[in-house]
Image (cartoon, rainbow, N blue to C red; front, side):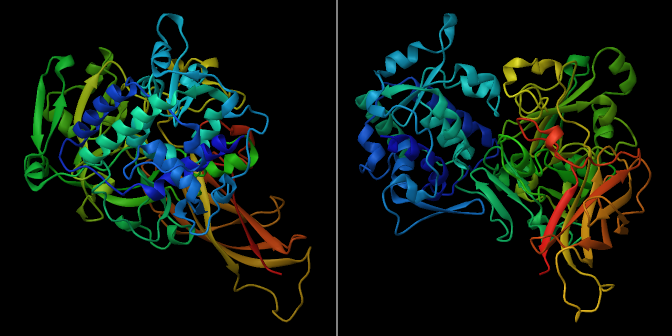
Length: 602
């Protein structure tokens, strides 16, 4: 039977509704993550086993391991609604009740698969030319070919080589935000795990869950109007109608993109907080600066738009194969006024008197490290450019930065992909090499060619990560225009009506948006929008978006709807492409095609 495989898929969507919402409570938040990771590492190599009956709803102990909890949730059924998951009270204990389509109908049943002991899984850890096996929920997988394509980076997934995934997925809960991980893993199944070994995993997980503080225990309270894609870690976008409600996005409505739990500092840790500026490789030593030290330096304010590199990823899924990552709409973009100190001034205080001389000696990278362990880097030319406006910010919209957005200090790199704007900054280093880690060197933020489905087919090291952002626009509202025709005239398909559209546009790199064009007939004719806010920014330093409005003639389609599309033009006269089909990439990054919005008029 295929119930087991379908249950695994249901589990990935439903676990979030059954696990408590939790977080960490000390300054070096990553310490607990690393502590749990050490536990995870030992668990991964523990003697384990699995029971096929668990897939059919057998009841585990109250604090069951992650896999068992997931399978129970699948048996109870779930209802999916705009990225959130809630239990379905009347669900039949069949996987179909979870709202998932049947998959892998031609795959063998669990009963037909060989049974492996955890010791056999452990032997296949990738060493000495062996394959890389892992187990999850009583099923054994050969993930060898998937390693280069792991969105979180190959080094992350290799931590579980030859062991169980349950403890790792308990830590990295983004795996439960959609059914994509289970869909991908279905192709890698090689057998079952011995039921006694799976029982050992379940028992050990139960002990660890009861003993350890949950890393998501103290997450911040979020605005209820945010559209949540996953809540552990939190990834949420701004609803379309609220994007252009205010030029500066209210801090509690600013989109959220996290990879880990949000660090929580005690009052003592806030008081003792400091950041290390490490120029030791350059022969200048390390300077430690407190928050008070930074606040004594010259304060600057920068209004900057920030956008997730995967914004509008959902559009790629409509024109090609499903991409890996959060299926964002247009709402993973926001703008704020950031206040703090120039990074170039901080680096100079630490001993970097001549950035050009340092660059000529090979010190081309300024690397950032966060309290949650995230690492990224930018070029020294951006970090030290007096007109590049890179700052260390301690205020957002005139208030201390909220925890979700980097308290107590974050880097603001205007015009760059949001991932370079590192939150919760703890260390800055001048280096000859770019930052280590999946956010800089891995697959996460690299746009592969459209024809490439397997990252092993390309040399990732030779491909740049996303840095300076491209050109984007969006439509947030379409309604009847004041310049419309007589309301008493009956309308039909093929008729033209006047529609009023509002939206936003933004270009990376400080390139001003010089025009926004809007069409209501598929690009046959265009109307130039009126820029209502943000059009007076300095040329070459336009870090923030513009808002626009337009009265557009639109043709009613056979479905009784009109469709408007926007395309922006920037300072370099770049235009947005009509379709994202030609820029499809496996990670779903950088969708900047015309933005289209339809609305019914008949």
